[in-house]
Image 1 (cartoon, rainbow, N blue to C red):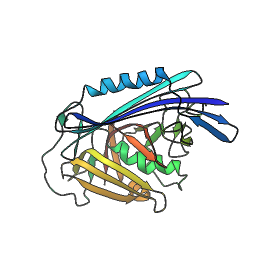
Image 2 (tube, one colour):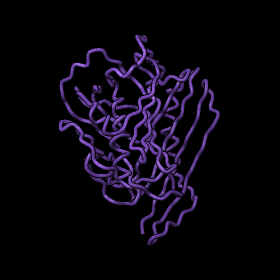
Image 3 (cartoon, one colour):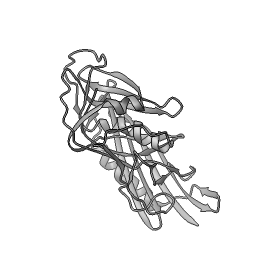
Image 4 (tube, rainbow, N blue to C red):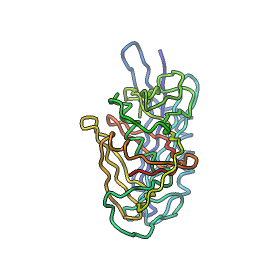
Length: 282
């Protein structure tokens, strides 16, 4: 029998005022093929969540919509903490404490090559490779120089099993994760790291700095990326995985952390680390 304890704190701030705060806590025990759960209070885990939220509040900005999320969980005596913050101003995402990124708008996106900056390519491959791996999708022909791995930042998962890094282009995540004590653990990504180096000259291109969100449809094998900030303004990229694989033309530099990724699957929202170098797609 494995006992899992968790506490999460989720806050919404608008124009410098907190308008919503939610605290969730509870225990779950895996007993055979059943999960026995209740909402018992773990004071240490709640305190750790509140500490993380207090750190995130230092980045609260006026005239912004900000979501703060922190969790602390205990399994096999080990405590795992996660925290992230997502921010928008006027519908535009920002990074850091008030650093608004609005590049000059040069032209509309008309399908020309894309230069993915600030680690934003990690969201594209999170959907096209990571979520597809979670759904056991059919393989596609990715560039041989590209590496996309799930590298868990913690030693054990939410079922008390030892974690391991996996190649998401060849197998699904090995880590079982759950949003709350009420949820059934699912094989989920934990920390997606994209690596690779390949020279490419994109010519006339659009620079993408931040995305508003992404989705993978396992029925159509199609990926949708909502670009929030780019040199062409906001736009939507929608392609099949095979089309995305064929479009990947190059990459350079070390993986860059992309902030604020809260991933949803089967109604369960969890924090997923995301890292990628500067990449080019055509």
